[in-house]
Length: 66
Image 1 (tube, rainbow, N blue to C red):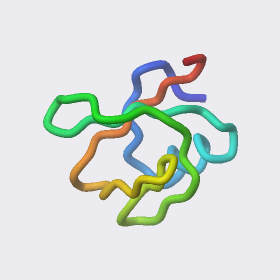
Image 2: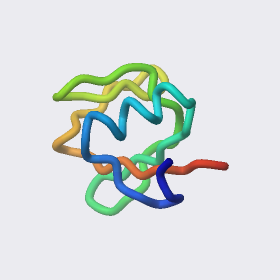
Image 3: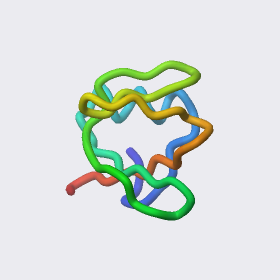
C-alpha cells in the first residue's frame, strides 16, 4: 500500500488506487487543483471524478485515509 503523500508515477500505482478506492490529490505547478477517486486511467491521462488530467502535466499524490 502507498504511504500518505507518496507520488503516483507508475501504472501499478494508479491501478492500486483505482482498485482499492484510495483518493488522490492533484497538483499542477505546486498548486492543489483537485482531490478525488480515480475512475479510469491510461498511459496518457487519469480520470478523477468527471475530469481528465494529463499525466505529464499534473502530479498525483496518494491520500489514503483522507
